[in-house]
Image (tube, rainbow over all chains, first blue to last red; front, top):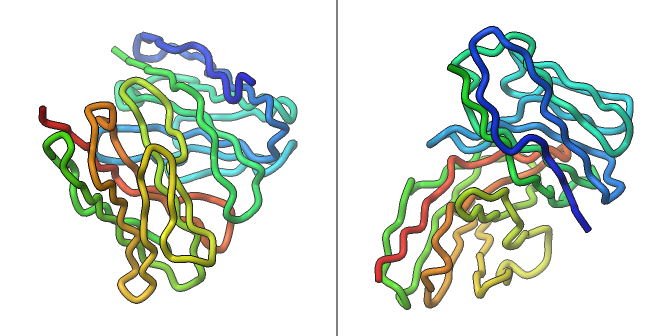
Length: 113
Length: 112
């Protein structure tokens, strides 16, 4: 099983450019998440999708948009990248029930110059 | 509101020595507790979780954790670490909904 697959693995953007991070899971999970990871700050939730057709803001949604394309896919879009968005981005999925674990992708390392 | 505190940003320890990584949480409701490990340049993977029952939980790679409700702690332990345990370890809690609240992480540094 591939689990959670993110693309791309690395990306360099210029300030003001846009891009979409792709995420797909093959575990038939209901819930999907986008996190950013910055040194010393743990994981911060950007957006999540509790089920197909729904999306909600997390802790740090400003500057991002998401699309739950279908049950498998959940994309994250940066419309106008800023240096503050330099980070490692992780997609995760879970069954969505209380107490269930999250499964993570390998991450996308994004640098905005 | 729920929160998670990992008391040490990094823990250096000699190979084959025991280690404890500390995690405290705050929550007014029943909690479910998790420890995840992140090896260099990889995503996170589950080490162990506490949902209910025995307060001592065993996980992968010889790790275990003890849930202490009175001290609101969920410390991670291993009796003898190996160089391959070099990683960052994250404690997380979920409570009234399915979302996970994360600690800031503890880097385990193994000294030869």
